[in-house]
Structures are given as C-alpha cells and as structure tokens.
Length: 150
Image 1 (cartoon, rainbow, N blue to C red):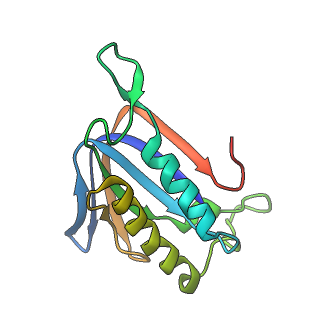
Image 2: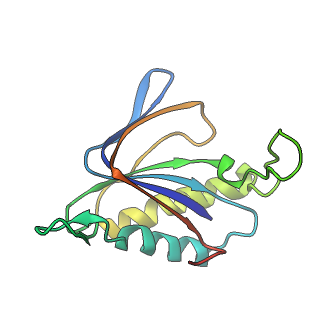
C-alpha cells in the first residue's frame, strides 16, 4: 500500500457536484492498493497514519498526533499511486490492485481508521471521477509505502 498524507486545515471531495466527504483540520490521505497488499500492510499503515506526530504543539514543534488535535481523515482511493513510468510516456498501472481486491481492502481501511480514531472517516467514492480540494497546512506532505518502510 502507498499513502500520500497531507496535513490540512480543510479538505473535501465531490462527485458529480455532491460532497461525499469533508473535514476540517486533519489528514487528507490518498491510498493506493496493489495486488501484493495484505491485512498486515493495512494494519501497519493505519497505525502509522494515526500515530504521525506532525501537528504543532505549544512551542511550534511537530509533536502532536491526529488524536491530540481531534483531527479528521478524508480517505481517497488512488490507483495512480502505482503508476510505472520507466518506459515511454504513458503510465502503466499494472501493479495497482483490481477492484475485486482493492475495494474490500479500501473498505477495511475505512473501518480500521474509524476504530483507531473513534471518529467517522470521510471518503470519496471508489472508482468515481472525484474532485478533491484541500488546503495543505504547512505544507506538510508525507509518503508511506508499506513495502519500503523508511
């Protein structure tokens, strides 16, 4: 799994002009799922996302987590995070999981994040043409790949 996590002061997703999810302060997370992903990847990533200490404390240091600031999560499925661009100019998405594997893992990530945070997770709609807007706070953007744990 790959995630692009952006610290935001607000974020929203629209599908066909209707808001499907929105948050105030928190994380906007783009989530890519590949065929090799497992429940172990999902659990590890959910803990990493919710445990990231990238929100400022009283001294202005990045010391607070999502729970510390009572922040929200907007989770968006993003198969293009697995774009292969080595050959030619047209990306290949061969590593991205097909919907029959990706949808259950995406839905499980939603429920896992909700269990860990105790809050409803805002979402887009899997596979839809989504319009995502956000105000990146900082900017702070972090990428995490469960297969390359850095």
